[in-house]
Amino acid sequence: MKIVPIVSGGMDSITMLYDLIQNGNIIETIVSFNYGQRHKKELEYAHRHAASLGIQHDVIDLHAAGLATILAQSGSSLTNPNEDVPEGHYAASNMAATVVPNRNMMMLAIAGSIAVATEADAVATAVHAGDHFIYPDCREDFIEAMDDAMELANEGFGSPEGTGVWAPYVNLSKAQIAGIAIDLGVPFEETWSCYKGGDMHCGKCGTCVERLEAIAAASKGRNVTDYDKTLYADNTYWRTVLEASN
Ligand SMILES: [Zn+2]
Image 1 (cartoon, protein in one colour):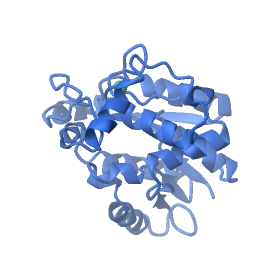
Image 2 (cartoon, rainbow, N blue to C red; image 1 turned 180 degrees about the vertical axis):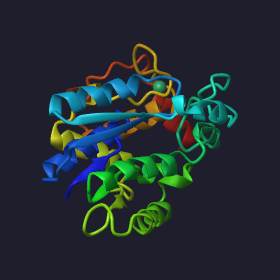
Image 3 (tube, rainbow, N blue to C red; image 1 turned 120 degrees about the vertical axis):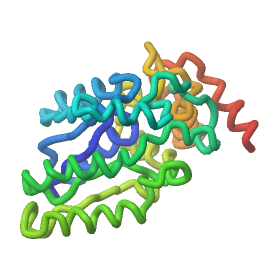
Image 4 (cartoon, protein in one colour; image 1 turned 90 degrees about the horizontal axis):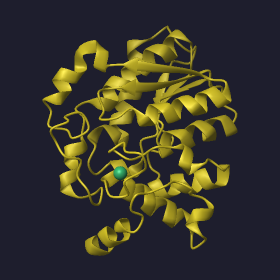
């Protein structure tokens, strides 16, 4: 299949990119979004992978399109610089502060235009089961509805079979994605997860905690540093958070 993946530069979407290629799909373009997130670091990682694979990298600048002002009002710590990025476990209720209103619908709709215009079979997004608790636009019901909407909106255009929305990891845990990354040899240190965007991963924000937990689980007792060469400002905090939440 010809696929247009949405690649943020994080661990999940970079793994999905290599997984799609490994499984024989045709990838001509990856799409990233600047929606006014605190830092653009992950976009640089997406760009490096695209360049090394010889794939086009389209960065859609929603920020320049005027969305930043609107999203800054949302109270989301990802787009409002006055809100602190919460630390701790991802499933905690304070992580609701990381919701960006309607983010996936926007991104899928825009990447869908690229997919239809290039007659691709689908847009792919790396949302996973661990996102379901907080983010409604990462749930299977939403993905199925967007898949239907994309086909209806573009009937007679795009791929002859219709251009849809595909979320190959929607029912996988982050640990399972980390396992795929290990099997494929995806370099974790060449992916960026941290919401804070410092010189190195902070190890304490929700997405850092989730990343460290997932890679440790996927390592199955093997030495984590054999797989994950990422530098973390704090690589023990995540364990104390998990112990506290159990
Ligand atoms: Zn972090």
